[in-house]
Each structure stands twice: as structure tokens, then as C-alpha cells.
Image 1 (cartoon, rainbow, N blue to C red):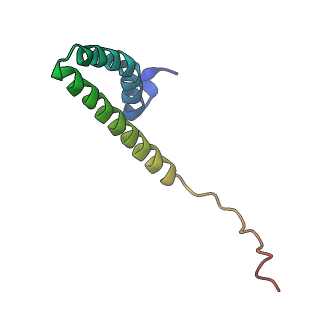
Image 2 (image 1 turned 120 degrees about the horizontal axis):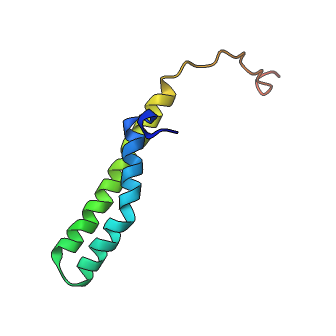
Length: 82
């Protein structure tokens, strides 16, 4: 599938997923040397990951819930027929 055909949240999800491990490694290595900026990078990485999950989840939920509902006959409920 062409990247241009994908919606913006999915394209952002792919970019964030691609950059996640390198940023984690760089931030971890900087933090291991005792620099405060490494910790900031690690915390920012977690915040970006959680935000991306929430953004894509919200977008997918709205996409599914705005679809037309199928018109099917209701199931017969045997428990109420006594």
C-alpha cells in the first residue's frame, strides 16, 4: 500500500514506531553516562509513545463508530420466553 494513501495518524504511527528503538538506545546511552538529558529523552519517548497510542486509538474508534450499522434482524432471546 502506498504511504500517501494512508491516513495521517497511521503515517505518524509508522514514523514513531520506526524512531522508537533508536531514540530509546540513544537516550539510554546518554543517561548511562550520567547526563540528565538522557533521562529527558527517555521520558519524552514514553510520552510520545503513549500519545501516539491514544491518537491512533481515538482515530480508529471514531472511524469504526461512524460507519453505517448493519441492518440485521434481532436474535430471538430464549431466556425471556417461559
